[in-house]
Image 1 (cartoon, rainbow, N blue to C red):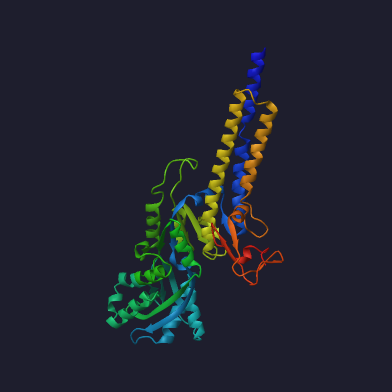
Image 2 (cartoon, rainbow, N blue to C red):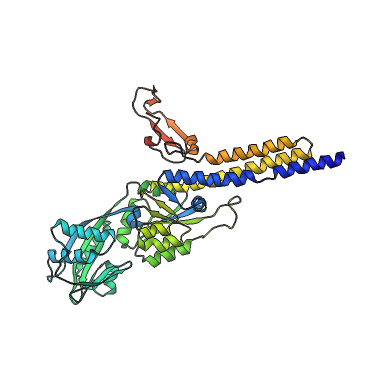
Length: 437
């Protein structure tokens, strides 16, 4: 009877302690807390699996136009080529050709014409307007084919070589200065105009990209722009020349992402090892195929609707600092889940060991099971954002360093008015901590 009672009690204790409640409750809570924290920052992550994938990213690939740059172009140069058309006619034809297009560069050319009081002519017929992916647009105006696009398009048409050396030097000079160079040509006439537009680099782009590289991420830039313009932008944000890829068609971007996707990835689970995933961030319709094939696709909120639909993550305010935040939040989610798994297994192993040593009761087994469930659940909830949008985990890492004095909750800490705030795992502005006055 005593032996039966002993093993019955031990069996009940083992059944109680083997309950997986600690993991089945804490893991979804951790995912939900991470998703809530990113959502409050204006980052839409489509599920916990994508958030976990962000934490496994090792390769970051960025599109240039609209991602590293703002996508708001300004017309810098417009030169008329030949004597068949004057400046007003060239601008009018550009406005007519670019009017139906949704590309940011098209809107720039239309607005440039409007600033000079020139609109699209209404007494001509525009038919067969077609977007040439990675090259430009074409249409028929009064039964003549007209083309607007980049150097690649006009080389394919055999029109680029008709430019004289001075015009080619001007185009190369504009490109090396970081501008996007385009041309307009008419069938049977040739190139009638060449223009250059420039796009401002995002203020935060250099800090984000250099920060990622310092943290050990492989950062690459892809663009369909010319080599000179691509290198000018890439160097400005701290990228080496070998990490800059230019003259890429949409399908080239797709093939590039496909070639590096999953390279070096391990087949081990998250608990035993880490995967080296590829993240691609873009904003345009041409980026949608690459966003779909990447391990993690990130779209800019100001970009095309198709890009946002094909992506796994959307940065609603198109701020690149949110990219760094989302990657670090994914890593925190994985770290927290690992902590919960280890803590839960260790606690259960201790209870089982005490059970067979005869030092555990059923009541204490129940209490320990419920207790460890609460502990790991609260550990997962530390990722929840506070009222000021900063997670509890981030608060713990933040160090407030008084540089020249200031106030904390109304208490003066020194003679000066300023505080310097630093964090071990990311930069925080003073707006992130409203309780610091």
